[in-house]
Image 1 (cartoon, one colour):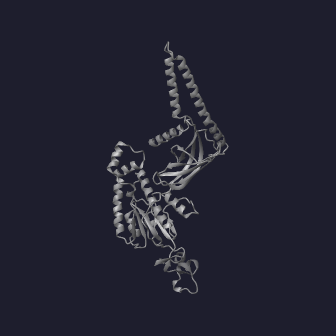
Image 2: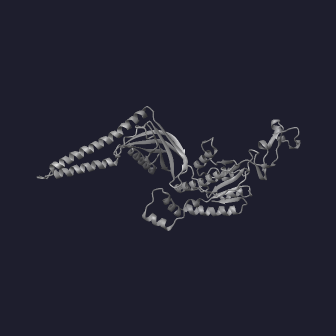
Length: 459
């Protein structure tokens, strides 16, 4: 409790520091001017010095020049800032944030487009931005790469983009936009805070995945012929209304006794047609401990990337692919199936509510994606007798971290990694008990899969 209070207090102090109207460069300038003024005064106090007139002139010129620079810097910022505050009061400010839904796989940076209107940029100065998101989280200060038309003498809007390092694959909810007006010398920094209700998600990166050979099993349209016969259930939960040419021996008399309706039970039939590949991806975590939050995030990102690229590989073929989520997500991109499923995969999380037997419908599933967090007993019950009717993609989460080398340890000793950096997490992973538990579970899953007849893809 005390730790949480301290974090809250620290966040308030940090948030309040953003409102300070001047920067450290201004403080350093004042200290330098004061020290120089005192030094020159000390020289002038020496009797009989021939430099008194020169030093007095130098002091005056320096003070006048410094004062003009400070006044011009101050006015160049305070005027556009005041205009912006007035328009903010009249609710005439528009801020739009948008992502390209593509991520740079090398820098792990998300390209975020920014549009602010109306706004006047400080003369020869800068407009910078921070974003408050997901409660108490605040981003770094971004320099906006302006793409506005340079032909305008006084542009009234800013249209550009920022590169935001967002390593997590998930949805971000923007709550406030903190806009900084800064002069060309960066002495002053006046702030305006605009409430925002924007959100976007960071997608998995595109990578190569092993070739998946799979046949559809679910018949929604009889327009695609498959290689082998498959069992298909009858209509309307295996029942239909009795007709004159139906066999009276198939009448369900229990239903007739209750509703006075004659219905017959429909037997399973053999069909050579199927239209859809049903893609199942389980995010079930059978490990009871969630103590390794940072490591779990990296493992989750790795799993989402494999799941998305496996799904995308199948979706690029002519056969329709239907992704079956194992958790509730918001309805988004309803008109674009590919973007909708990218959003579902990107915003999914490890869950403990729906295990594999409850989630998987073996009669429909063509592909099942599982992770190293899966329970072997549940897998045995779910796919033990599936035969060759399903493709199982097993994602070994231990592959999320590269092998630690001696040079990494030497570098860690002499060069401290940044906080929460991937290099630091690699070293944490190598010493973590979670690694040993995960490796042991992976061996059990591989042994189980080797005893089944289903097609297996190990990633």
